[in-house]
Image (tube, rainbow, N blue to C red; front, side, top):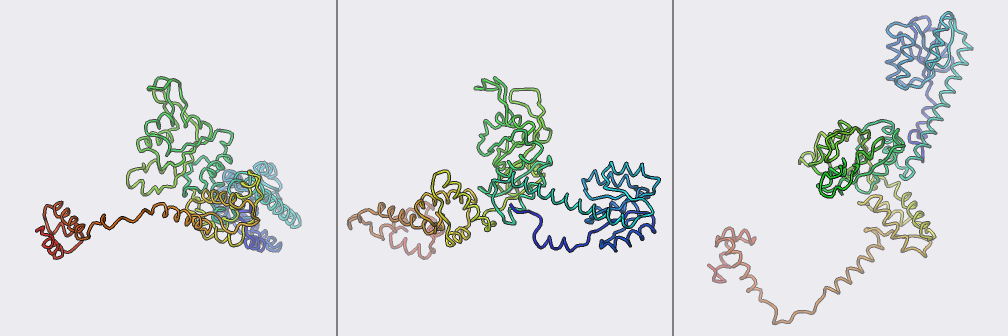
Length: 478
């Protein structure tokens, strides 16, 4: 899978950009001198007169290296180093200090500083330290990027695609993975919501805990509380043993609530309380049990509509939607369709000892132009049908989708067969009811049904009152 961050253009821009060196020193003479040497070395100097300004610049600008004095007003070098550590900002920090402050400098080194320089500065030494620090930083960034790509391939191996839409979705999942935020995955049926939920779990701190998947649409109203929270023996008729509910099963792991939009309205309040307090009570039990879980939920429903018609609690929605992720439909990932189709074809043919044929350019265009309302699930079914029909072919010219020629051939064949079956012998002339008689009966029935009210009768029949009067007179119904 390709890198999600760096395009060729962005890499060129990065290579052309001058490295920014932030000089944080309260002495103007030191700033001027350092800035002069930094410019000569081909870098871009940026200045901060105290620790607070230094932090402000770090927050708003992309800094490649920091030259940091220890003694500064407002915030000193130690406080800046603490800020970097607390905010997980990894940039090379070179301490600039007087020779008698070496013990303090060693303390900064232990806090993560890369190196130190003593005043007055040796320019050759400054050049070497800056060059080495930047090289090490770039190497660290490269390793970090490779680790991220490796992690992405490992976690999202079931999600195939190179389109920008799916890369952005994967990036969102990677960002929230290491947190404890509840994730709401939105998307149409068949887009792979559960695959994303599993990937987020596998990449989280809870990966060694259970991943409990619950289809909320399949839980009946009567059993919902028992299945979700458990019950004790004797709690109700048929409760012959203690039962651990889904929330408890997910202890130290992840609870995946699929089709959460279909959850019964009566159980939503209890689910909200369990998520808020991280406590559950089994049916028939008085004590509460503390449970440690993370919730990932998914739906293809429109929550705005559900909340407005009171079928879904707004407060529960906001608990679930701490971090939303939208999975794009397949029709918005046209660049991925052929790639996914080839994967499904090879997978199915390998499992069934079939030599995989190739997709013709015509078949590829046909797949791209079809709108795939069932998304990836529909595509997989279509490829499997096509593979069976193309056993002895070297090339597939049409995929079995409702929009394909092959599908239409079968559909037309079925229709013609059904139409032949529906045909019956023509009735004999003696069995045909005269049109006048049918019309009279229809008007009479409507006239009586409307209490002999001409206006209502005319409206019911869809004719004008004048026309109705003529008909009533004609048939002697007035």
